Amino acid sequence: MKQCSLFYLIVLSLLFSCSNGDILKEDITVISTSSDESYELSVEEAKKMVYDFVRSSVTKSDRTIRIVGQKKTEYSIQTSVKTRSGESIGGNVPVYEFFTENEGKSGFALVVADKRIQKVLAYSSYGSLNDTVFNLPLKFFVQTIPDCLKNDLEEAYTYTKDTDVLTKADDPTKESFRHYCNPPVTWGQGSPYNNKVTYSCPNGDPKYGGKAPAGCVAVALAQLMAYHKQPSSFNWNLLLSSPIVSQNDSESRRNEIARLMFDIGDKVSMIYDCDGSGSNIYSAEAALRGYGYSTKGVRSYNTDYICENILNNKPVYIRGVCDKGGHAWLITGWEHLVTLNPNNQYETNDYFRMNWGWDGSSNGSYYWKSNQLASFQPTGRSSAYEFNRSLEFIYR
Image (cartoon, rainbow, N blue to C red; front, side, top):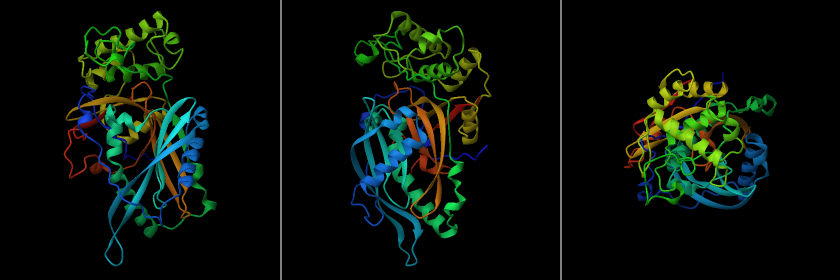
């Protein structure tokens, strides 16, 4: 199996209550200044990176995307790498957020538009960075962009100094591959998914229909089970007749999805609450075994094991915890892309496909890299939303 690495994935940690009530209290800090034009890609060059990425690594339906706008954020980055005169190597690094449209849905892409470390950071055909209001892993992903840029710049200069430039004749791009085990659904926690929940929330968000959310644990497990269509006690043909279940669906379909979610909630001893319904990963693992799935237990984050599961067509249930709560979601794919950069050097970028469990919002490909654990708990910041407790997954 090819070597797996990790960076941005652990960036996405959290679970206990799937709480979103306090996220608005903390804004994302962005460092803004003018970019270093000697290294900056043009808007058109950055757009081409998005189109090339989509053509090479996502589904055919996504290949019809249009970029309809953009926003540029500048990050002032200084590295530990020194010039001969003793000055720190760094500069102002531009990152574009491109707004996309595809089949009537709006999405986004994040692109580092610096020739030294150019790459796509994230792509989602449906969603927005505004999802950070309720999607804690996505929020932290955005917050750690400066750390990512710093690490990549340091590696870029070290690579240029210590490594021979490969020729096009070597063509390691042939080593690129993509492997997906995407559930055919994009389910969520609101109505009709939570229709059988009895905990009343009359003053809650209308999308929950006056009840507590179904819980991210239930949604993650339900989508994993939908991929395998097990156990047979649920009507998978009915449930999978379309990716979502809405209030406009038949009563039988709405009842079946509510039955599935509530049955999972019962098996994981879900604690229902208006601010977020939660359980724990050990109960989730026990529930999976109860549904007839074999598991190898709960493990601390291990990239090789996660990639092994993906290559064996087993979506990965993962959860992380921070001081304010947490979240459970699925990793459903691995994209290993080898490209030739403008310096005639081949570089490898890896992406995980994420299914966040928020009705498909911001599901997509997210850049990740290895051996950067310190960056997941950045120093000099004080936040209850830094994922400092644990990141674990169910190994199958």
